[in-house]
Image (cartoon, rainbow over all chains, first blue to last red; front, side):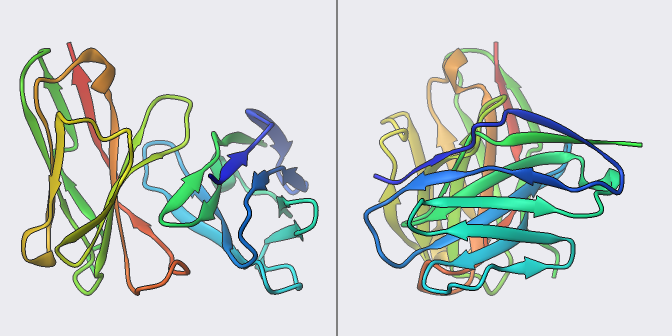
Length: 111
Length: 115
């Protein structure tokens, strides 16, 4: 079974700073997809970024980038130039039959 | 594109009653997923459909839970004889494709409170 672990329940960052959210996972598969989803307060979950395991290059989407370490089964999310609108729960997820989510990291961006 | 819609958004019921949630996916999406999310936790997979076929069910989906997707369009999730432990947010998501690479689009969820 695939498991996803997010070891940081809560994090805080000041506006314009950079923050990194951690995620580790466990799988026996060789090709798979990893995701970071964002869930703002009282709003629906939206995709932030996706990484295909067979691609060595780390995915980047504007201010969001990942550090994918396949051998270590690590998939961290870096948010640069943090904005107040980045305040949300962030979930790391592994795709098998369906998305398997970690418990999430609550990120608070402060002025 | 109106997104994934769920109804009702909130439901308060007494223990032992039956409840039904509806999900309307994005129109061209062939896959539909149900998840359950409790406070402070990540969403937990319940079941998914490809078109009208229910292809996978989690062991979290007890006999009191049933999901349908007639005609491969909207889906319903029914919980019979509700228990207080069923209190949670029920999330629906849809996606396009047959592989496991696609982005899931989530609805805003249906929050169930069992008294």
